[in-house]
Amino acid sequence: MTGARSTPSASDCGDERDRQDGRDGENGRDGRPGADEEDGPVPVEERPEPSAVIGRIPTDAGLRRQLAAAARSRGRTASVASEIDDIESDLAAIEIEPVDLTAARRRVAETTGEIERLKERVAALRGDARARRAVDADADAALDDLETAAAELSAAQTEAIAAEQALERARAEAARNRDERRRRLRLRDRLRNRRRAARHELAEAVYPEFRQALAVVPGGDPNDAGSGPEAYDGDPVAASLAAVRVAALDAPVELRGEAARAVEAADRSARSLLRTARVRVGEAAGGASDRPDV
Amino acid sequence: MLLVVTYSAAARTGLRNLCRRHESVVARRFGRAALFDETVYAAFLALRLRESHGGDVQIERTEPFNEFVALDEPVREAAAAYADRSAKSTPYAAFAAGTDHPDPDAMRGREL
Figure 1 (tube, rainbow over the protein chains, first blue to last red):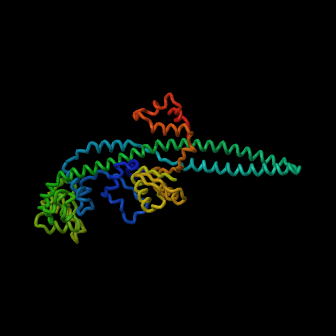
Figure 2: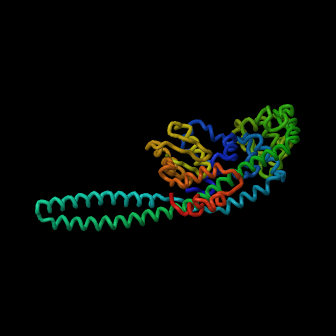
Figure 3: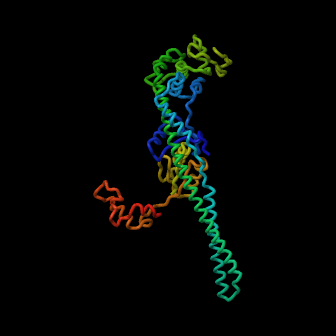
């Protein structure tokens, strides 16, 4: 049931990574309001194409992600990039068979129930035969039944042993399988941590340029930049526009809503503001239709 | 009690949420595992988690350990004597050699 991307990672009982993971609010999945205990899958995210992060403004991505995407679009790689590649290839090599002991467990339960039933029957028939003999009545029929029931009980006991052994083998197989699942969980946790480290590093690397870009884009102010991505205190749309200006994107950038209005109201062309060859102003810009290459 | 162990982030999150919402059934929580009370309701919750996450949820039933029932006296005595040994660096096998204390390999071969 666990597709490679459908069930993300975790680690061992209460180890350090686990607690780190608990602190990491980046995905916000922990305190999701109204989340039932059946939580949706939280995939280990792919390293996204820069255009998937800042190709459309406004974006849901946090500033750090946007800046990391901008840095990657310019060919920058994080120092942990090769480690990330290694973890990814380790993960890709893991193959996990589904574990399902349901049938084996059910068979054990059924054979056990059958034995109980037959034991009671044997006891009843034995009492019956004994009672008949005590009063010199004909006990042959009761003895025949007793013999049949005893044979059935013996067969059921044999079956129960076979069922137990089958469950034991299945459990041993499941234990090996779970070792692999645990390994995968640890790798995915590590991958998530390294990717976060990579984003931090990349975002820091382009932060000076981001600060300069804020002086150019509409609504931006370099004084809002602060010391790093977590300290940015200005307009989020301006920050996204500045991130695009820092980036070198191949794909067109699509501006919508507030971003479209801000760029259209500026006295410079979108291309010169964003230093991007192709800018599209989306329909959500309040009546402005798709205008390629503004 | 019931030991519930998870093997994916989604299952781990599910267990974490379950523990938060149903504190009363949780006897102990670990990072990606928990011990639940021995009640049908706790088992029901564990089973629901497994229905959601399949092989990424393992449920085991544990029982209290009573060394006076499960073990012979020599084993208990050996454990106490070894904990009380004077040379801290002595491995148990060396400690037991030439004494009446049970041999580690012999103990390994015996089922509890």
